[in-house]
Length: 117
Image (tube, rainbow, N blue to C red):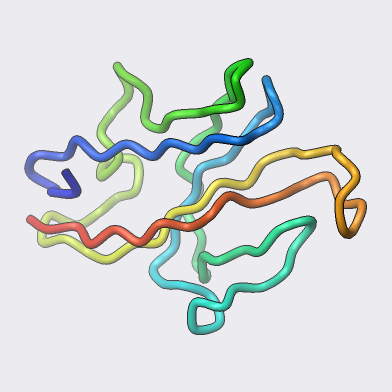
């Protein structure tokens, strides 16, 4: 639940290279009217100012969860005000595979969450 008073929201990303480091981050809106901007082998969808939430390592199956059990709630990591806010989330990760540009980074799909009190 994306509620600042009863926060149970977790972000899960899959399809990553096994054991790769990934950065979960957020921003206040979508970039370029939700069309994003090409960066590395992916498309960054989160507009500035970007707030880094934390690093996780993908498991051998290529998935990562944030926050993990035992971590603080997502609203705390993201400094979501008690009255709520709309936030865009995305994951940036290392991906040394040979794709379009030969870059070594990529992005997950983005998620928009409307936080309520």
